[in-house]
Image (cartoon, helix red, strand yellow):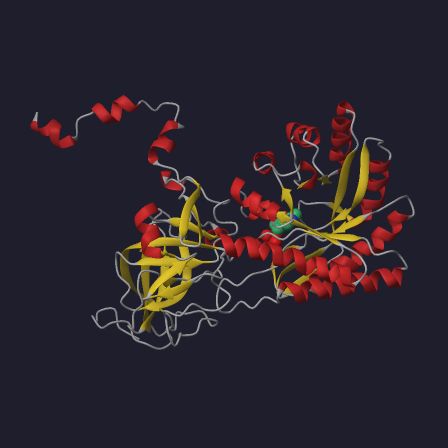
Length: 492
Ligand code: PLP
């Protein structure tokens, strides 16, 4: 442990400020398996993705930059769909896999998902517009939301959306009225709050969960009766979503068991073709994350559903899922340029013992990845322009925003000679980064570039300061361009 006054480099070995799960890597350049997209590798030290080097990407598009490995996204989409298809075929039923667009939806990505045979789930009029602009068959879309506007409902019904997920009693009548006005019969699901909430390893099962989505299990039978009383609505089945970044099948099994009991009660009043168990399958963000393979999860859930249906003596329904992160998360990485580094002495024991935390500040931050600030989410990082044999140093990768909570990677070991001008790559930023991005501090959102077979192309244009100024109603370009600088004024 170095003293703050010493100019010695940060020592090798564990830094007491590191979280318990973070090990000092044998090689701080190594790309840990599972964290990086399938085509990511090193060549001559440099990080390569989709056969395009990090240096070439940064030179052509600048940083920060969202990079999406197209082959990874497309192949995972197919694999996830096949995992559920196979698992449910095995129990004599079928699965329906929706890509959860909220994870990352652009016109291009919607097309990849469509081509992979996935349905697409949207949760706002904006996401609906993207899916429709991509040319996705509206019949293959699902529409969520706990407070859809009348206009959004109308647009969905008018557009012939395959299924709208009803989230409140009020919505039943609103959707029925919209369908009646258009003379159509709208398929709907009912989102229920199963009382199961899961995250990573643990799940919590209560009688009632304190959250805004869905209708309590106790009220679902009445709600479905109300849905069925409307000739303009076709009830397709129940829906629930138990959480995110879930590594095991237990939470899904518990919520499936609860929903099947209700599903059986509903069968007494008419057809219930499907059951939707939502999304939430986890991915690795750090070397401590070890999610079960999707095939294994799909099999365990299918077995639970089969056993539950047998016990209840009901036919196995078609079971729908809505994975987002597990399809697109690992396909993305973000490239940043290091601007400054700073060694900060931090007392880590009551007796005043000091350790050094090295802050490595990059040219993006919470505006392109809000998850660390929003959820204390952990990420990893690697030098992308080179490798180095310098001893690993504990770093915190910070953003450039005027906010102390603006952290990109809370704790990581990087080669101790990381310096201004280096490129850093943060893996697994394909889900919930671009969709949650902002213009905080008047920073433009970075472009999104898809890479494949040595080609890189912009799939979403980045925002420039001119884009941002153009939205300011008081903006007059002639003012800033004609106004003299302070120096010119003082010389006048
Ligand atoms: N479905 C619903 C209703 C959701 O709210 C979410 C995410 O919160 C998802 C699907 C997708 O979850 P994930 O991206 O974790 O698979």
